[in-house]
Amino acid sequence: MPSKILVGTQWGDEGKGKVTDVLSSEFDIVVRCQGGANAGHTVIANGHKLALHQIPSGVIYEGVVPVIGNGCIVDPKVVLEELAALKEQGISYDNLKISGNAHIVMPYHKDLDEAHERKLGKNLIGTTKRGVGPCYADKVSRIGLRMQDMLDEKIFNEKLETALIEKNPVLEKVYGLPTYTVNDIAKDYLEYAKVLRPYIIESSRYLNEALTEGKDILFEGSQATMLDIDFGTYPFVTSSNCVSGGAITGSGVGPTNIDTVIGVAKAYLTRVGSGPFPTELPEGDAVGETLCEQGHEYGTTTGRKRRCGYYDAVIVNYAARVNGLTELAITKLDVLSALNTIKICIAYDCNGERYTTVPEHQSKFYEAKPVYIEMPGWKTDITKIKNYVDLPREAKDYIDIIERLSGVPVTMVCVGPDRSQTIKRQR
Ligand code: GDP
Ligand code: IMO
Ligand code: MG
Image (cartoon, rainbow, N blue to C red):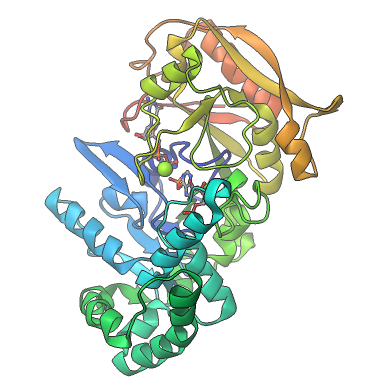
């Protein structure tokens, strides 16, 4: 069984957690390669409902080894909270592995994330305030602390002292915030380390040895293509590479080990936080409200109401290109059952110029007006359908159009949040 990368094709919350869970039974290892506690992946299976931020969604499947790869940033407090939630639900996490090279989210990262957003005022990014941007910035500036540093008190304290020489003046003088001493942070973090120590490993070696033994790996993406630091709607993006390339650098597994790349796309579109969104429906629009309420479009991480709009084939087509997608999973098709007719954006009109791909300049993307085709809805409950052939003709036509416009075969269709509400499509 080959190894596979799973990525979000839109602005996040496509249902990556659910699709990862569905696919997990086919894999030995599920690894997260980028992002931190900004992710919110909801998995509903076997009577369990879990919202995971740091731990890979594969943890629910017994026998699957969950790995937090080197490209992730780790908030140890969040990891411990999630482990407690797993324990409460009777889910084992004994085989969890965390890369010693993954960077640690510190309290000052969260303070700076929040303070920076406040400073931006109305131009704020709308981050999840999980300290993601400041933590990745420190990684690149080479003043970050890594999970392996927590294993040695002396090293941890020395590196923290160096970091605080830079961080404290910024906290105090730029943002007027309280500063930290080494002890303020070390007293908690060295306690976290006592619990996390057994899970911290050299994960690239572990993953490559597993591949040599014939094991199969699923790389679970977080965030999504349009939130990618290079390919997304910069600066309204997250601070990591969420495209398929991030799975390589974030795991230490070479690209020649990857056979397939599955993109997850919601049957419509949502976004949390600021930034352009051509197919967004205005606040109060009846269709937008229906999508929000039927789709329960409230953030898993922050509880914020998600902005809702029609499916945008231009961005999924772009995602197909920048990720090298070999297949697509379409989620939340059931939510569209409420609509009489359904629109799909097939191109943008940017000041009279027609675009069928994401415009090369951000100001064009801002002014992009969607060009729609409109299709009849099916107005029937599809949540119990198990076989593709049994979907209403209009729903199959909708999937066919998505497939044609993306140029990527649709191999999975989700018709509800539960693991069982998944139609695998044999090609
Ligand atoms: P992720 O961040 O990509 O993992 O997505 P989230 O978990 O943040 O958001 C997706 C939400 O949709 C979750 O609440 C899922 O339980 C839910 N979901 C996933 N697939 C489906 C589906 O096919 N139909 C419905 N109705 N809900 C779904
Ligand atoms: P999952 O994995 C949706 C968005 C934030 C903000 C921007 C930057 O659940 O799909 P950050 O805290 O990362 O610095 O915020 O990115 N964002 C997400 N939106 N789903 C996510 O993750 C997100 N992670 C970050 O709302 O606009
Ligand atoms: Mg989410």
